[in-house]
Length: 426
Image (cartoon, rainbow, N blue to C red; front, side, top):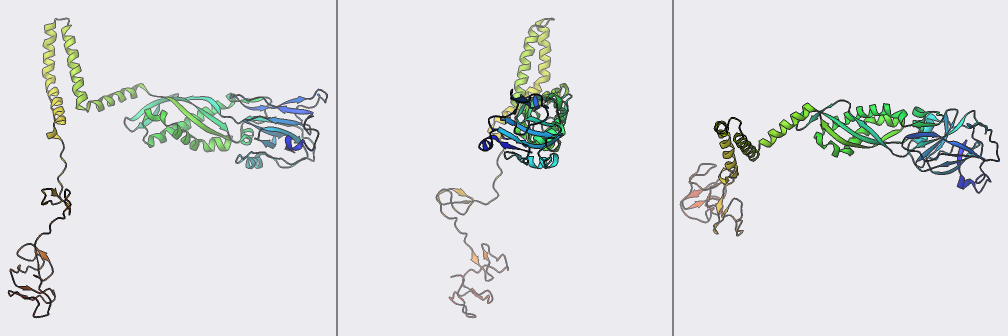
């Protein structure tokens, strides 16, 4: 028992334009997830047939955004997710028009059946249309404040509100595990009470992952894609495998801390702001201005008010001076933190530039080589004694270049009389 595309069959049969029965479903709204097709019978045919038997050669029209299932005695015997016109042929194998959707044929093998009944109709045959469009306007919100570990404010409690969308990705799984044989329609209201509770529980877990990633609580509305990915990972087994559904998008419209957390946040924000000496000095100046206004309007007289203000100024003057001193230090270049001096030795070029590298940064001249003398052991020294063997610096005369020989003499000669090596001092 299978479906045949009407365009292909029209050249081989006269039933393409003269269907005895015609199954059709109008556009499905967001509130309707599954709807049983209505049978439209030609006026000249038998109108007393069973409404749950599909006559061989009947036509079925499938709209965009719909999946169509042929169900016999509660089992799915064929399906299509392709839009178009189809003919029901009770003598053919299931055609399974999946339109490239992954997993539908595997689901059919699991939940459907792949045998014919010798061309005879079953006891109960129905046509169901399933909504494959994105289902919008599914609102959610936290009934009680949720603990959130904020990177700035630490442990706080927040409430969140928003909406999400989902799609039916596997209509066979959805029909088999959720809607089943319905007499008319299966609506979103029949499903969402349970799904909303599961969604909020999964969202709590997703927000905990956002906390682990270091997202601040007031940045959560900007992290819609990350949250949607977390949600799909969390609900993968619950919704995809058991219900054939997936989360498409999550929109958090509002995140608010509870009253106690709000007070704590405001206190921490004030402390952060007052750590800036400019802000602290400005706040103190504003408080002094308010004190002057209140003193002038004191009920006991302006003199009493200003006397009290003077005492307050004396007590707070030390703090004002401290903020003023901090400000002066911040603005004074002499109090600026100095960069540590380089530990690399410097040298002065003939052009007057001071350098630490091997070439002058101004004129490019190489660093002048230090004058020294070479000992018989091969070490180059600048002092009066060799830093390696301790031999004294020869004033004049001969130093053999052969370290194995080591011959020296006060006489100036070109070659060693012992081994014939040249003079190192030359």
